[in-house]
Image 1 (tube, rainbow over the protein chains, first blue to last red):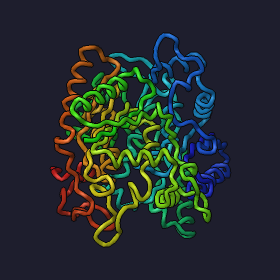
Image 2 (spheres, rainbow over the protein chains, first blue to last red):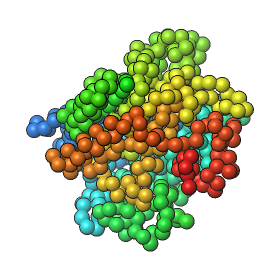
Image 3 (cartoon, helix red, strand yellow):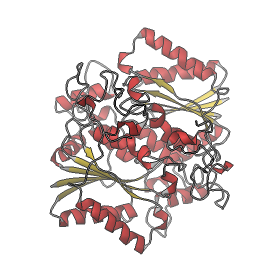
Image 4 (cartoon, rainbow over the protein chains, first blue to last red):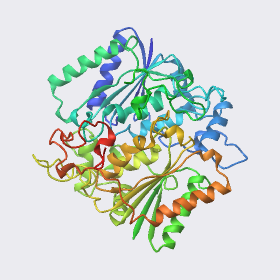
Length: 261
Length: 261
């Protein structure tokens, strides 16, 4: 199968760099084809702006989504954007690997999402009607592919626990898991997490790579997180709220799980 | 009072640009001093990297936090970083204004946080002991200052409601409110939100600016969101989990509110 790793860390000799190299070797040893978008090495342009289209619409000021649509539909996207979209089309699975900086992905990776996720490619796809609100949240251009996060953080696991001060890690990652990956159609696997990176030694590194290797071995067989697809009947349209009989009385991110309590 | 607006939108004639201009006029009319960091106009460097220090540590590969610490302590930060820190010291209140892109702030603003929030300035501040885990979450360099988000989104309010498909807006913004603003000490006000930006007309624009003006008028008097400060006794240290008697049985972001149910 084809695996795209989008990787965001500025230092090749870092823990993140080592884990990325390990992942490439493990996946290739399993017979997969691997491409890596090493965003820092590529000097990826992080900020979405008018330079992302080769020929802006002539009749209006720059508009992030309308100019993205125009460029996508007319083959006028900046070449770096089109190249990443092509890698996504090629991939059967996407791995986003990054250190958790200020409780989200690094800016350079956020800018990859913003620029590569063009209107017509990752959003603004499909019909809007009484029964459908576009192909998103479980449907879309990237449906049928899998995605998984590999995330490192200096904090302790307890800090990210159900009552931990940073908030539960599943909730911190929900906007990425559900809002960035499930949105254009990916089946999203539970994340692979490394805590307390400041306390990494040879022994922990060995157990960490063992665990990461096991997760990569089941990249195409593990059970994805089961959210309700948007157009499956679980949501009122156009309010896009859960119907009363779905997760009755429940609110918040976890209410969108198909197996919510 | 002194107000810093950090603003992230690529097009000056956009709704965001108009709201930013309105905010500057309103605040100045109230007698406040206003500075604007217009990140796109400044061509703000979004990606944190080894270029952020004028003289890297000589004994080791680049390390995001250790090199940040070294640069901050030795006056070796890139001038754009030091200038933004000086604006934060000057400010009595910070407004972050941005369109919600993929359920978070634009990459250029995330990169402002990552680069300006140096080790020793916004994290790694204060003692670590049995009773304290650094000056953070309610204490820190920026304690005594206020902060508020002004956020626009194309989605409907119901999409961001308690059972809305995107997740509740308060939960989507928690990593920014609590993790980026409360962390270095800001008192955080409820956000000002504009939904369905694609359906803005003159009438809605007038009511929107009226509402924004009212919120800016009470920037220094409104009641901040009341979370438990980290070192106030509400958390076990070093696990940093809420003590059993605090928000008993409750989990998730909202459990950290001092007035949690």
